Length: 346
Ligand code: KG4
Ligand code: ZN
Image 1 (cartoon, rainbow, N blue to C red):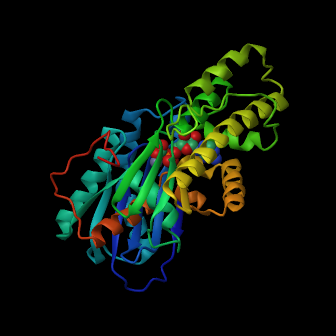
Image 2 (cartoon, rainbow, N blue to C red):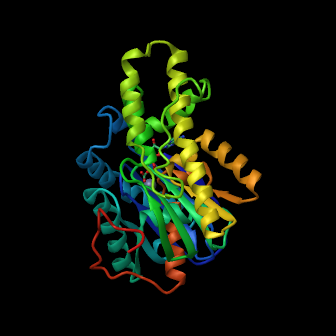
């Protein structure tokens, strides 16, 4: 279990948030000023690895086991009591229904027990706003790229809560492309971090995998062709050779990175925006972070990236997004249902 603690934040008002949209159970406490003071994650990766992906039924059973102890742990980390919380928040979608229900049910139960409001949070808004955490706030206009396991989208942020969708993937998400290719070449789940590691030792030009730019001005993505290209290459590859494996990883990663970086740049140019942010699990990727830093510096764009532990699923980002909603006067009715396909922009 990983944790973050900053119990120094005195007696500032705060809220507690839960995240259980997929295979990580997480709890966090954030001050209403946006400072994360406690964050813990109970990861289920080892459990799901043996199946090569997330098994929803197993995920929800494990959320049930972990959620209550996590609440106790973050309260202890922050030196607070339940009664000190101003609100209780949870991810209400998108994600796996049976997983979402655990976090939202617990947050609603705590809200009722303590007589405090419940705040439903969109998981993608958590990712979207995460680059503004850690002293990078306040949330302000920018062009944002979200790259996670289930989503790849370009969003124009006008202010917290006001977003415009600029483009999204037509097929696989970037994280999905990493994970599917990794599975094809025999790497364990989740494949993104494995490819990241091996790519560091490989030649990114060893294989010319396709970059799907669709057309010169489109802000849509497509990664399914990359997967097919790797599939066609497989019979010719000796994957027992460490160098070949590293070269495939480096070449696949380079193809994904180039498309992500150039589409983000294109979106920033087309919106006349100089601040860009990148979030979601794939934004942990070291090659992507380096390429973004270099390209943004070259073009005079300001780049905000979340801390790596805030890029992959966590409750800190959900707490931070909940704080933005709560401070703007938005809370959610207890009847608010979970939605596995909850859109970020309606
Ligand atoms: O945001 P996230 O934790 O969960 C979703 O909301 O989907 O993203 C998970 C995705 C997975 O596809 C995982 O392989 C990918 O992020 N990922 C990475 C890296 N770390 C996680 N992809 C590339 N390089 C990484 N270092
Ligand atoms: Zn996520």
